Image (cartoon, rainbow, N blue to C red; front, side, top):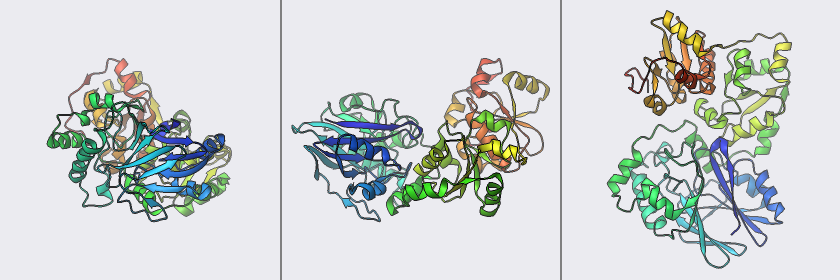
Length: 472
């Protein structure tokens, strides 16, 4: 059976391409649809359907642009109520793609419209299931997202639905089916999914905690809900965009890909209230950046961090990017709903410096200097911006945990007079945190280069005891 996974690491996202006898279908596409269209053209195939497993929270789907550009029909599972023309399928309804069949299995739980698509080959053999966020490799979808859009859909209600969906729709299927999930490790849509992006259903029945045959409903709900962290703020905004519709990516690219001189860039920043987002290498940012600009490096988990730290997807944004990568930035921002990019600094930061414009830097020290400073400054404050789970596993004695995900809610808790130190694991998140603090007027911050990875290599005292001063 010709089914291909198209994986995007930044979002830990998997779309799927199905083709048979000149007809194709795309499942859960990303915002930029060109690669799917090009893939179908390679097979001289026409995209007949765009199947959506649910209204996604962690990215804006490309279904509307695919329909506009190819004439494909958009298909959602039962109970979906899209604000545009789409086919809402019935449970067990069958669609034909060439010689293949795609059977709808309504599997509510992650969301109420969540649907699994059963793939059946030309000989009538069941081949695999495209599960969306119902079933991951090693995990299942979190049931607490829908309540941020529809308050009465509590996590307990959805967890009950998910228990039934797994046991009544998924687990009775053949063990040799291939599981094709929507996400892999790194996605915030689950809490413990595997780095593997496919598996057999039979193996998942053996190793996935949520598929234990003897698991009671009560045990399932307790294990599923334990350890869930708050979802990123952009999730409900993306859900609404996927339900209601959005602008074409072509329009967004035309608006955002405007080169601006340093003077025009500065004027736009002052007149629009736009966030100045610097996506260059973190070392370049530390050595020079526009005052009050925010760093989120393009070569890290860029889009998810932008979504977590910029609270409103409608926020105007001005970009400072490595030359030649400006359109990549706009595209990746649009994947998580940030469509209001107003332009970019032509010539990148070098142009700003050559124009003799004011710039700022971040004070950064190596671990050896950090250790010496701590020996001299007995009351020095150290902030660890890693996730709570990382901190709980092991951290510096006396360090305060302030996860980067929630730093905007805790800015007032940082010192404003005495110098303090900031670190993450490797240096990416700490530079983001330092840039946010400096943008809020807190300049007495020192970043520890190399982060906890280098701290562990030193003889600084560590502990796995959870410090009572942990902020979150």
